[in-house]
Length: 334
Image (cartoon, rainbow, N blue to C red; front, side):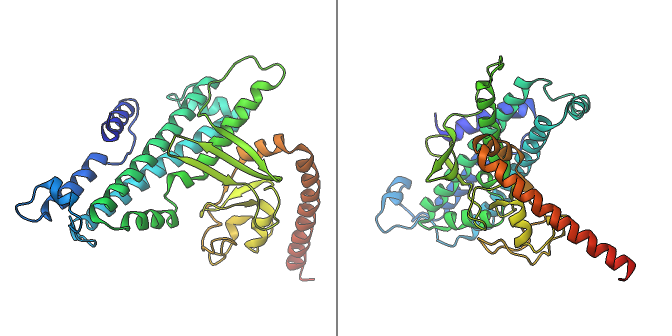
């Protein structure tokens, strides 16, 4: 079965359950076909023109495609990533919630399955949704470059990565990967009775020369590798946080890079502060705390985690003391 048909059937089946945004794969392909047809040399059949060694089906800078194709794809990608992030966040917040908060959330959201297996199934649906849309976007951009004999499709992909709307870069996908491994590990613990189905196969936390790497093969063509070494302290991330550019740091290291106190937090960081790696600005305010990843690393690196916890606790107390001493002096005028 061709991917276009497979994608349309998947999205149709999902829309019957809930109204999901998706990539207009068929519509975008029609735009490309029209563009190719309009620029064919007269008297030459379609297949002959495509196979011509020096033939050009469409100008490299095409107003027909660039004026319709890229804006439409960009809008659809924003909708897809926004929906995925919002629902993955709700799912993981429910999983990590206390008993009372969990009951309250289930009471408010009557459409959400009210058991452990229901959460796992919902996580599985989210992963499949992210995967098939990532493949759809990759294929349609590859099609664009093939027709135009250009690399504008790849340039567009780089552009959306900088705009932070690449679904495979989402911090919530990283959280779902950690959620999956945590579920597998919890089944090995004494007293575990219920065998939970996996969200996806080939997902693991690996250590290469002591450096942690979260790796997952979502399909034969899509693999996600996430480096879990903080580029500031050069150690395994502790209390990990993902900036909006996608880079992951220890929370205290991120506060230091943003020139803020841990009491004030990253939300008070100046917009001009940059990510230490990519030098992007405005990346701290929307940072995401990776709580599932924190649980995973705590379970996998117990000795390191305990030692780092003691060190960071002392440092946080010192920063809090200095902060409140300063506030008191400012208030009293001493």
